[in-house]
Image (cartoon, rainbow, N blue to C red):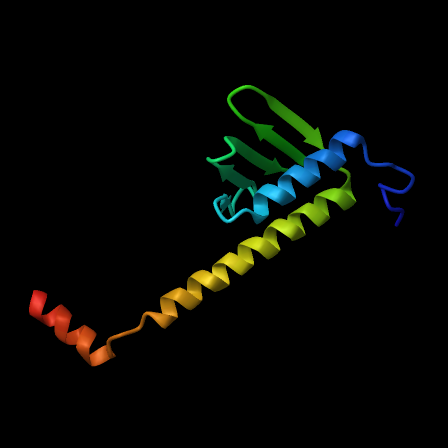
Length: 118
């Protein structure tokens, strides 16, 4: 099967778009959200005033002044999704670690607390 990206060079807009996305995805104050049914991915960074919507090879970079829509090649899209997924997985692991490290009660204590409230 032939690679549909073979011979295609990435445009300057595509390269800049990927760079913007990666920088915002890595920022600690960026909110990352993924919609499992549509497979859309979102990045929201309030401090920079930038929102990104990633859907089916298209990246929409939006703020209150401009909106850009850039179509990515197959290879660039796959790499950007992997980058996003790796970051969201890292955050999920941190979140889970925090949850598990805050265990202070035994199951018996939890049951006791519930029974007192009934």
